[in-house]
Image (cartoon, rainbow, N blue to C red; front, side, top):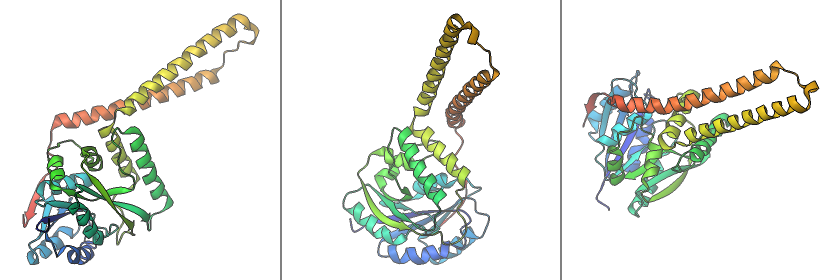
Length: 309
């Protein structure tokens, strides 16, 4: 396993200030291997692509794949997987929160037989309580609802064997929730551990609502439990309503003097049942939306240009 090609996929979106520091740390780590670095520009509006082009003129192993617009982080990773030629493929973000130095350990785990090597965070630097709390809630929620367990405290910083890449490239789901798809495959897995650093420059591109949509995509892609839960809610509400009817009838018969018609009870019942109905319709709508996107069969992304590819 000494003679192999290592592919490093880096999705970028407005990361002009992070690309050079990343390469300064990444190149010394992987220069002892045969390598290729594939930047996937996800519709940047700054000088990210221009800098990568200039760097690619000096080093032909630095490659660029540019989208016409922003198609999303997962689509950028998918495009990278479809382009990579490596025997082992690493995906890493450009913000330097994930240290390139541990790629060596990931390669060692892969050489020992692991087909998937996750980089698992054992400490987070520079992230507030809200960010850490929502991330923890995300993994607990998705593992509760999903039929496929997804490892906690892992993101998209991982190494996968070319067999895993072939499997991923043969899947055409829209949108692709790669964390779940990689875990679902069941290939031999190992871990390396690291401390997640602060973002070097700029702000995260994953705000609260993007993270929420990401979580919904993951849940809907790997579980039908929300539909089952909606059925359970409906059954519980119907049962409570039926018991309420029996209670009121008996009260009318045996205690007619205490029977008072109140608008508060009606209001609460209507609001409760209406809320359950809206939640249920929303869950069903999410699944119908996924079916709609699959039926449309639109391309997952559009490539504007390729450099050194």
